[in-house]
Length: 421
Ligand code: PMP
Image 1 (tube, rainbow, N blue to C red):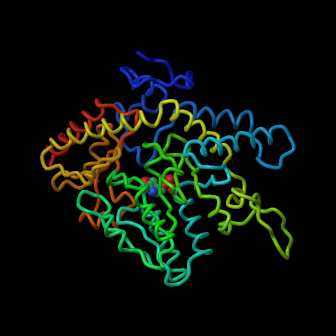
Image 2: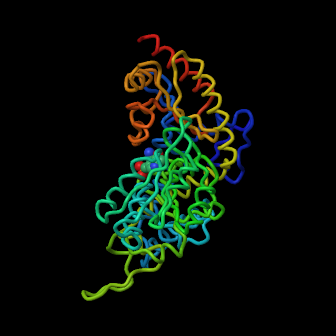
Image 3: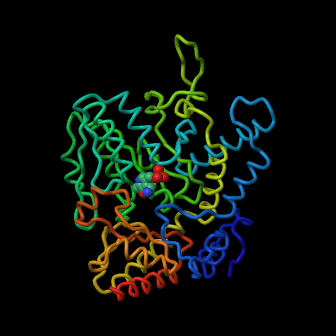
């Protein structure tokens, strides 16, 4: 039985045999805590994940021992901090298999990555009457930036419908293209339905119309291997805090040819080459898009998180989470009057549900009293809620540190709450 703390043996990945769960859980101190005198069962991983020790320790270590502003510093600490920061960019590049670190832009998160692109791409390539394609299952952060752009520029938004299982209707998608279509922006994995969208096919169809594609990878990068070259996506966005890293850091991947063609999003330090009052020239990629002091402590901690995930292996994670989600689905389906929203053939580790006419907020609040953390509400996907004909759902979302025992607690908890109504 492997019991060693993974941080002490990150070059020696744990096998997913008996006991791996305990060893992994030991790396996440928060999982040992209690709430209301009961063991915490944390099933809100789609909102944010917990952090392994190595990530938290990296933040402490860098503030205590290396802290200095990055880039252009002549002194020792600044150079060391810069090296760490740029090594993190390389770690991200490798993680998603981008061609070059020039293609990795650090942002505050998925939301800022999408806003950056909506602004810059909108400025460069969109005019009144042009069209952007999104889908019914988008998070608000992949809807509202396009609406802001629509209001600014008179751009139209077209929406791919879904079927009742929560899958995109690809034939309908094909019909949405016109000569005015300029961009497709689609979520890889739905944060409500768990649907894993067929990104390769979506990209191929868009490219056949010479339209680039942005993928919202907030819920995919933590759960399934992502290779941006293999998918041939033009842009890809994700957040560090959903992949066991710190809050306030995210990534926008963009093919170099596209990023080169786009104007800066924000102005300030770091993103310039020369400034005079008459004319300013911009820095090279990726710095052109990184105005101001970056969160270099956060990027180092993100690299630590990726190291942790690599040590376990995303293939192992995907397999384990798939098994856990299937088990949870079976358990939950046995509960009287429980309805699951999202039954796509290809599904990630999210289960949205309602029981009879029990309000999602009541279910979530009462589960919380049992120590079970789930999310309730519209999950920042109100148009999807409208499509499903509900106001909100309860959502349990799993990570590799969750266990079948926790799923059993969830199922028993739901039944207990249901009996109270
Ligand atoms: N897209 C999806 C699919 C998400 O689940 C989330 C987070 N709930 C976001 C975008 C936004 O991510 P962030 O808040 O980290 O910017």
